Image 1: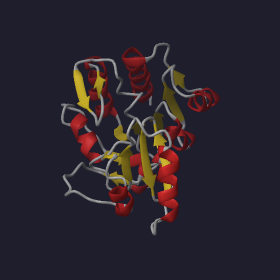
Image 2 (image 1 turned 135 degrees about the vertical axis):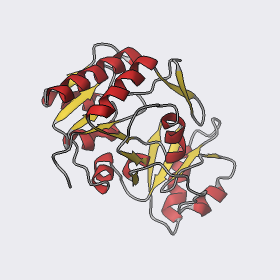
Image 3 (image 1 turned 120 degrees about the vertical axis):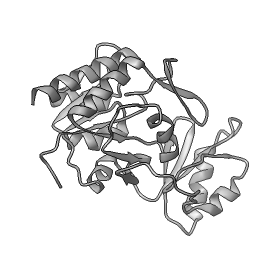
Image 4 (image 1 turned 90 degrees about the horizontal axis):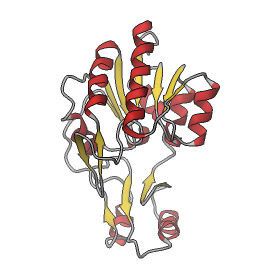
Length: 239
C-alpha cells in the first residue's frame, strides 16, 4: 500500500451530487441528481493534482452515468456499493445476480434495482408499511446470510456490513483526504487525516470533521460543494 500518494476519496450523493437541478444530470432509479458546472471545473483541477477516488453506495451502472459526463477528470479508482465492489476502472459487466435470488422472486411485486453486483437492492411498494419487517423475515429464513441496510425508500441486503475504507484498501490506497456527508462515510473519515464535509451533513460526520479540525462548508447544496472542493484544492496545492 502506497501511503505517500495524495489519495482524495470523495462521496457522491449529498457531497458532489444534489437534487437541485444543475447543468449535469445523473438519472437515478427514482429521481435525478445533479452536479454543477462549477463543481466540475474544480474536480478537473483536483484530479490533476491528486489521485481522486470515487467512494459511493451507488453501483457501477449508476456511477458510469456520472463519469461519462466528466471530461478531463482523471479518476484513480472506484469504491462502490459502500465498499463491496472496488475497481481501478469502470468496466461493463454482464447482468450479475447476487445471492438471495429466492428473496427477489418472493418479492417480485417489489421493484428490483438493477446493476448491483454484491448486494440485493429493492424498492418496496409505498402501500407496504411493514417492508423492513417482511424483508427481515425472508433474510432470516434464507440459506444465504445477510443484513439489511436502509437507504431512504430503498432496502438492500448485504452479505456483511461493508465500509468504504475497506473498499479503498482493496485498491491498495491509504486515505489521505476524505470528502463525505453521511454515516456510510464514517469509517473512511476515521482513517483519513484531512476531512471535509457540508454544513447539512449528518451529526456524526460533522462531529468527526470538527474533532480533526477539518473543513465544513458555510452553505448547503451545490454552493457548499464548490466551497468544499475549493478547500480541497487549497490543501492539495499546499503540500
